[in-house]
Structure formats: C-alpha cells, structure tokens
Length: 418
Image 1: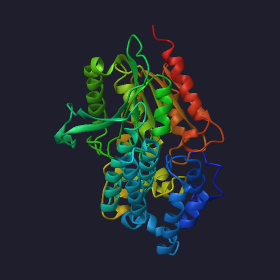
Image 2: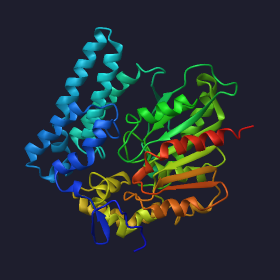
Image 3: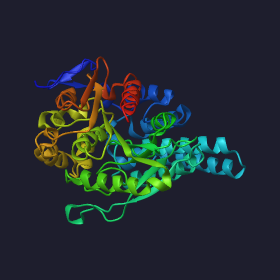
Image 4: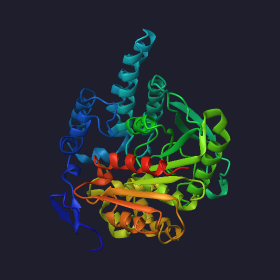
C-alpha cells in the first residue's frame, strides 16, 4: 500500500483504519465528540457541554442509536435547531437588558449549536436554515468583541460565470487589531476555511493572530459556505484570490493594511487551496501556511474509497464529493463520479507544484487519516522556499503541537521584512 497506515485506529478494513465512532450515534458522541465538546475544541468552540448533551440524547432516542441518521441531514439537524433558537432568544433578551458579556456568550453558544447542526456541508433545507441562523447569531455575538468582527462584501471582479462562478460578492469577515497601527500598516492574514469549518467557526484561531498584530480576513473555499467560486473548476481559486487581493490593495488606506505583507493560512481542506495560491500567486503573497491539507494522493481512488470509515466523524468522501461539485441525490453516484475524475484537482498532476512558490510552510500530523501524510511530504519537499513540519503521533492537523509551531514560523517570517 502506498499510504502510511495510521496507528491510532484499533482495526483495519481493506488495509485502511476503521474507527468505531461510525458505528452508532452514542459512539460518535462518547468516543469522538464529548471530550472536545467539554474542552471547547472544534467543532464545539464557544459551545457548552450542557447545550449538546440533550441534543445527542435526543438523536440517540429518535434514531434508536442508528448511525444512519447522521447521513440524513434534515433528520440529524432537527434536534439542534430548538436549542439554538432558545439560546438566541436568551441572547436577544440579555442584549436588551444591556448585559453585553452575557449576550455575547449566548449568541456564540447559539452559533456553536447551529454549526454542529449543519456539518459537514450545507446540503439540505434544515442545514441551510442552521447555516443562516448560525451566521446571524455569530455576527450579533462577534460585533460585541473587542476589536469587533466586521462583515465585508468583496467584489468578485475576476468571476467567470461561464466557468461556473456565481455573480455577486465574496462574503468575508474582517478583524483589525486594536492599538496603534504600525507605520507600514497592518500585515494581513487571509484565513482560508476548510470543508466543514466556515467563517463563523474560527474565533480562537483568529484571536491568536490578532493578538500577534495581524489583521485577519476569513472566507470560505469553493464548494462550501457562501463562496461564489465554482466548486468544479480547479482554477476558480485563482479568480477568487485575485479578487480578494485586489480588494486588500484598494482598501489599504481605509483599513490601514500593509499591502506588501499579505499572508495566508489554510486549514484542513483549506490547506489544499493555500498551497495552490502559494504557487499561483507567489508574486502577491508574502508567506503561506498550509495546515493539514491534501494535495495529490487525497484524490487517489483507493484513498477516497476508505475515507468514510476513517477519522472524520461523518462520511468524508460524500462531503468532499459535494465540495468539489459532484452532487447527486444518490451519494454513492456522486462519490463514484468524484473518484473517477478527482485527479484533475491534483496540484502535482496539474503542474502547480512544479511552479515557484512564495515562502510556504506545510504542517500536519503523521497519523492523519483525513488526508494522507504523503501529500504533505510530496508538496513540502519541493523548492528552496518551502518548510515541512510532520508531527509524530498526531492525527489530522497535528494539534495541539501545530498551533505554536505555526505562530513561531509566521513570526520568524515577518522578522525578515526590511
């Protein structure tokens, strides 16, 4: 087998790890999600265990603990919405009473509930409702942060409608550090979201970058959230990023940006897009971090065939097929079409990895079973401008060791500015 076989799984099926949290709703909760929920770790950031315990108890009850409910998006989302609605009403009442901190906390708790209701991708009526309600709650809560979160609409001026892009703006969130602005302006970090983590889901990570003096612009990747770029066109990234970079340069005087110091950080599937733009926009980006992405072997049919049984809490192959524009009422047909054509997205096969890159860091855990670690090694060992960090004994994203390593790398890169 060409792939590292992850040691974090207790069993193998067809040569790939198989994780027990796929076996029932109770297994998903007890073996995969309860601990991160209690710790406030993704996808439960800003959430409370007390909000989610009864939701998963209801999911177990209504499904008879059958994991099939996890693949019926509306049935899965239904128990979450009343909890999110109740938290939102409580937040609105706290805001009316002038209790700013309580209102902020409650809005963000509601946003967390709506977030988990619509993962891994928005593809059903109740999932769409959860996404819209989650955005509203998140925006109400984060406008109360200091510095506040500001929704911005970026003109998609390089859109190609014939290639599948949607007309309209690119929705994003902007946060600018408090305190005195540097003489050259704020360095800007493009925070590129992942498959299931959208611009409403990145509070802790964004705050860490703000604390280090970076303005942050957070947005979704093609095929997810509100991104208007074509999901099925490998080059839509280029048009998306060109439009965003143009907006940053044009808005530098208004927002106090340093247009000569634009960085990017892509997380999980966003790491794929980060590596692409590190090459395609090498002349416009100062430095890029690809955190936990896949770049070539993630598109191998053998890997795709095993994704639904591995580390991801849901059916990953189904979700990635949807993200890359392969959509069918029968998920198996969508996955089959995606697997047959997926290599057209490969950054190696397309020649992207052979082109020069800006300063680039690839970082991931060696035990990743969402994207093969071979992809990080392949993309991270090319060119003099690229660094690679592979974290032993760590799963997807390599946390908690990855976060401090990323900040140290960015700070070292920024220190080289003249």
